[in-house]
Amino acid sequence: MGEKRPHTSESESESESGSSHRTESRASDRGDRDLNSKQTDGSDSDDDSVGSNEIVNVDFEFFDPQPIDFHAMKRMFEGSFGDDSDQFNTSALVDLILSQPEIGSTVKMDDDSDPYAFMTVLSTRRDSEVITQLCQYLVKKAGPKAPALSQLLDTHHVGLLFSERVINMPPQVVVPMLRMLMSEIKKVQGFDFEYFVLVCSMYSEVPGDDEPAKACEMDVFVHAEEEFMEEFAHLVFDFKFSRLKRVAEARNTFADAGLAPSRRCLVIHRSKIDSILARLEDVLEL
Image (cartoon, rainbow, N blue to C red):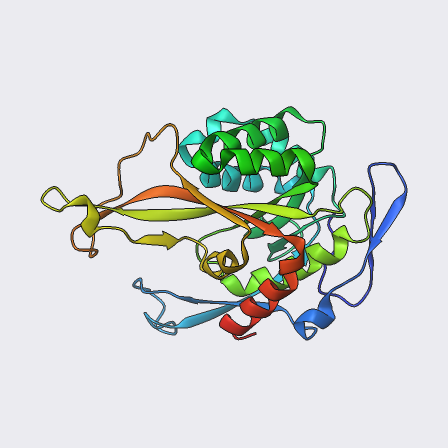
């Protein structure tokens, strides 16, 4: 069972070597309070006590990654990698995360529920086929920046940063999760990363049938906070999926243009993490 992170007590988990590893609570970073998710429900309700636009507060807590999270995390990974997800063994990827419970966190309503968000990091130096597949995939997708990325992966200790959440989970959860993660990797041997690689989910406008291609050049981050993290990136490149099985989403108010999935890769030096946290605290009004 996972330990609740917001509490003032410490949680104890077993490391891969069998020795106990203690991770301190980060309640002080959040003012010793629960996370609140505010959602607006615009659907009709038979209950007269709940209005169509009533705001519902839901309390969430932080947990260590645990086996019960396997399927939910796998679904989020498959969504993140989109139509290229079948190029990786996402089950093996989740197994790697669960093998290091002292690193990373999930956000859930209770111990037995599915996570609504998770953040963790995996070393590119791990002897794992799926890690090799991911690194080769990113180098292939880097285009003109492939030599720079390949050299960086070969000569520096790089961490693959994963930050996933369901669409209606507020971005405010990212700051405490990132702060906890940076604290944890300082305490565990083998996680002294110099760079972090984060793949951001994007949507790009697709021009309509009678619209010139250059008329639609808007890219939208699925996770709003990643737009501000990009400001501190050492290396940035965009890519599309190799296998685009889905058509662009239904035409909408964007001047009759659809939205096609794409990805943006950010390579961030560890010296920029504190600046990122400060920037996110500012824009998210924490």
